[in-house]
Length: 229
Image (cartoon, rainbow, N blue to C red; front, side, top):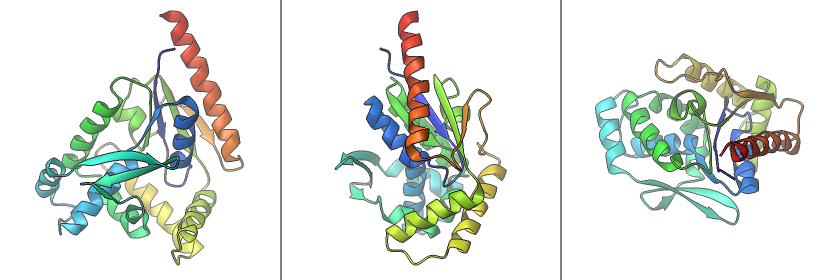
């Protein structure tokens, strides 16, 4: 069967990262965490003392760094210039900085080019906030994941606590809402629901229920494309 491009979009805490990894594993596709790519650029900018509104310096930074993914013990790891930064890019501080850095036209241009190169031949699951609208608007399968603010904040809170971070639930929910606001209001490639996406509200659903729904959709499209070839 033809391997497809699967685009998964949605706000923070909607389950994109977990579900994209599981979906890619079930389909034997490559998982490309585009959010991690932007977080990695934000980390490199902070380390280099580059301001989020210094677009020229950010653009130059993107040409000088390397980002790649590896799978270790069934977990995707992201590397910045050969260093595993998978944990350090997931702090609340990096989440808010990422929203600002990812709004830079220079950064988005560089990352979109890299993402398109990674997914050019299909067999990929990409997650982010503009995959189905900007990066791969012609993706064969698009999903838009959503959930209530409370549910998304709770998930994010539990994720951070599991990593040993001392955070409050109320502050985490507030940061999730703020991240949504910033992503929706940015001028370049804002968070939008693709018109042709399969919308899934996971507020009251388990991960397995959402995964099963997504697998059914992708496999139906794989079969249809196979019949048309």
